[in-house]
Image 1 (spheres, rainbow, N blue to C red):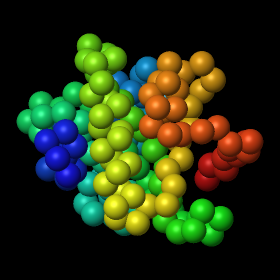
Image 2: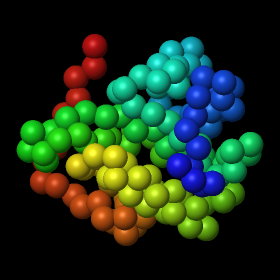
Image 3: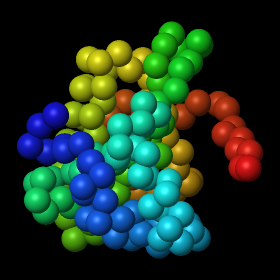
Image 4: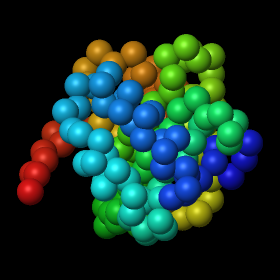
Length: 147
């Protein structure tokens, strides 16, 4: 995709999992390492349901973004959901996350994506980044059922 975003493959899982664990710790997501591995493995093996990209240099990434794909009749086709977006704390607010997000949105749009969604808590400081990228709040509540 570029020198900024690199598709994560199954061979990269041992570099990715500590980043996911760090994100989960920050967000208070209480799952174990096996759950994380089982959840991300299909995406790294080419599942059409989503993909994960490293942010930064391929050999020493500073973060990752995970996107799942779906379909929206309302929005006219393929849509995506940013499931997780994390950049190491020491390199935050330097523009790398913003640049990665803009490149990701541009590239996915060129490949047929009609809309991208994300979920965030009120007061999340990353909202400024998302608004600059064109995300807007919708007057809908996200409801979730978990099996």
